[in-house]
Image (cartoon, rainbow, N blue to C red; front, side, top):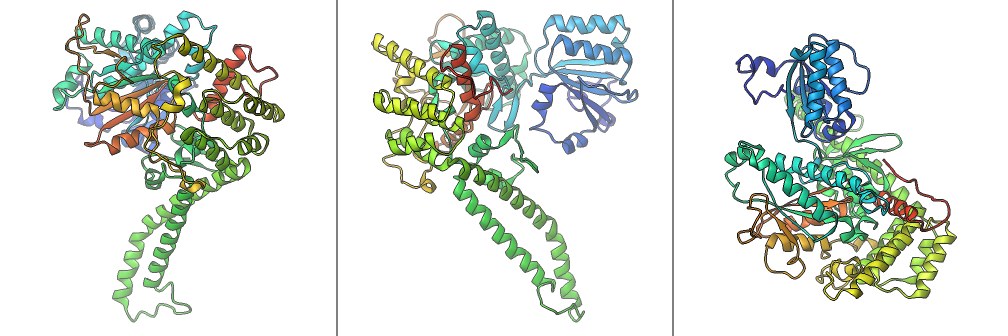
Length: 607
């Protein structure tokens, strides 16, 4: 796209070598800027000849001799802006790339406007790029669709709103599988948003596959292993509610939860940092428990100081009061050259150590101020062991921590026990009120749990995936006990229900937990299910409707690594949420349902 779509034959029939180095301008709208920012930096754009990158919604000056590459959503407003730019002759030529499939009315609108202003000749190309998702790293993506959980669970939501959201999610997933170049086999639980999205995506893929050639024929012919299709596992956030709320002790989830970490960028009061695959320390330690990360930073700093001292000694800088006398000119020159060569690497290491020291210091401030280790320890006891230290629970609810921290702990408690003692529950609610915490989210989860209990009692064949049963399902039986002390509270041995379900779906063997899951195969005939392939699968795409998090992502990464042979699992969600953002959506639903009472401490939305 940045090379003016040169994978297609150029209009003049040339090889395009000259255009390869042509300077160009990149024009994007807000969502497409978010889409591109985790993948390409300004330096990368420069390498591809992009001299300016501009926002389509802001005033721009004319650069009449340069071609412009547009990457925007296919909206009427964007079509009007492109047509106005073409009419004004802002750029020499217009290479228009829509982030996803452009609806016919939008295309007609652009064509009519450019024809009316006699500027259609400036539009060199219009392309659908199917890029309407944010790729945060190789195995993680987001559709950047905020507040999907609220929209899907709002009792007052109109059917048309839910349908349009389901279609938007299906279109986003279509972009993902089109980019991967593979038609997946879709699995999901019966009922709810997951089945709606699965049906919409299946219909969209079937319609697309009728055309020849299509987005998947070229990929299939070039991929030697195209016979091995991935499985797309769709889940609704209610499948495992607690994971979206709980506190975590690993470096990456902690940074995401406590600091302002969005689109792989972290903002501290004085600094801004990129945290992605280009940072070796982040790659190596982002899933480690926080105390281990702090130790690793100290070890790296000690190693750095040792290497600097070694360089100083070799070049004479370490000899007290002894100046270079020139007696060993050749030897000293070699050492100086080696020192000069090692300087860039040492400088980069120092920058990396300083960066993570600053991040760890900021985290430590929050941990001490909010007693986050206590929250994590208490929640972990409830989730993994099914036990609770009542005194610790109540002291946390009355003590340090933000109102959101206390609410998250209380909701985790509510979800951890099928029938908590009434007296204990009253004490928890009283402690929340003492701390002036808005009760909307707590009461909302309480109501969901009550409804699910009634449903389970009424139906003898009720699925075991009801959230009231999650305490037994949430973690596997491989963990016998968790060592006390925060340093030893590692995730090894515990497995989320999501991960166990994905593992069962990938194995494709008969399993009571997933036997009733629906199967959609867009390549199979609509009638008959005899030839449907149920596994095993080497690749999976796991998608959470209503918001995902780094805790689930880590669990799925671990699943891929421990499998023999190793499996490739990609995780995606409508948006990546931390615990505070998700509890705010639960609070908003509670307020919409008239629960909680009192003025809210939580803003209705973050976005």
